[in-house]
Length: 66
Ligand SMILES: [Zn+2]
Image (cartoon, rainbow, N blue to C red; front, side, top):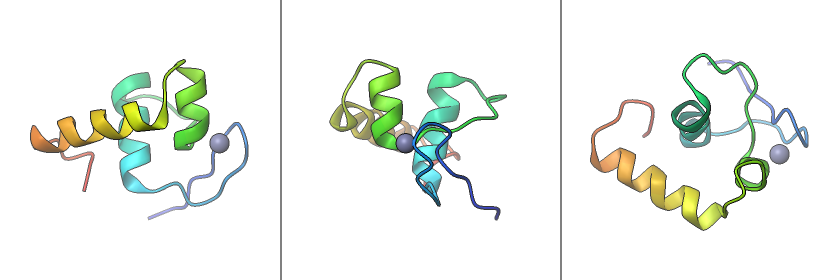
């Protein structure tokens, strides 16, 4: 699997769940990915909030998350 870096701050090796939440919230066709910190500020929310959403998607059995 290829490595993906945050398009905003350059943080390297964004994990699968972070990529999943990017796709969920920004759209499946999204090409640029944000780390949790940058995604939270981009969406005007908090990392805690995003983590809660990830847990919800996992509970739904979404394949984008592990
Ligand atoms: Zn970042």
